[in-house]
Amino acid sequence: MKKMMCVLLAISSIFGFSFDKQTDLSADLMAQVSLIKAMMPNVNAIGVMVGPNDLEKVKESIAKAQSELGLKIVTVSVKDVRQKVGHYLRLAANGVVKNHGVQALIFVNGQDSITKNPLGIKMTSSGLSQSKVPVFTANEKGHSLGCLGQFNFDGSQWVVHIDSKTASKLEITLPSDVNGVILN
Image (cartoon, rainbow, N blue to C red; front, side, top):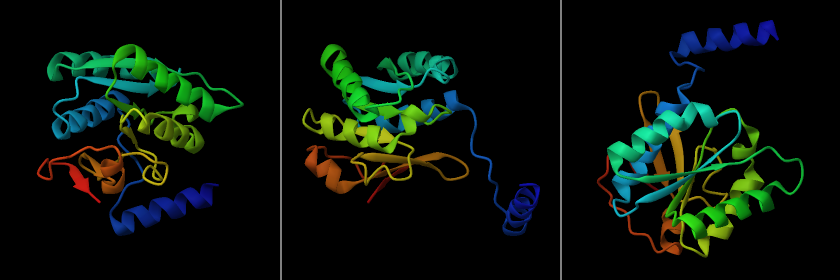
């Protein structure tokens, strides 16, 4: 293990990149919510799927986004479950859309595995597509899981890659001139 870490550190110093990602989960979420609001200005309610270990870390950014961006942020606190993860997450997401008028949903990319679970993300995206609610994630397979947006940290800022096929399916027209938004 130590040899592997030394090799990774050597490679990173030779090629000039870091294996450290932005670790301030609260700032990450604020940047991601801001990107959604910039490209979808009519959205006024966003659901945030967050696991139990990350909930406290994002409370500050949720309050800040609500006040600065004029958004209603609905926290969907989900617990780690062993079975039927996809079904559980889809039900939670459908409930928040129905009960709170959520118009977009973000999976927080923190330490909780439940919000990174590919099957859960896929089933949630599929379930919300009927309601025309876009789903966003930092999962590297986001587009293949049916998400409209896949967040990536490019070293200095968050960007969101938009799947144009999913946008068309959800009947969403997005501006092409928003900084940090990349249409694919």
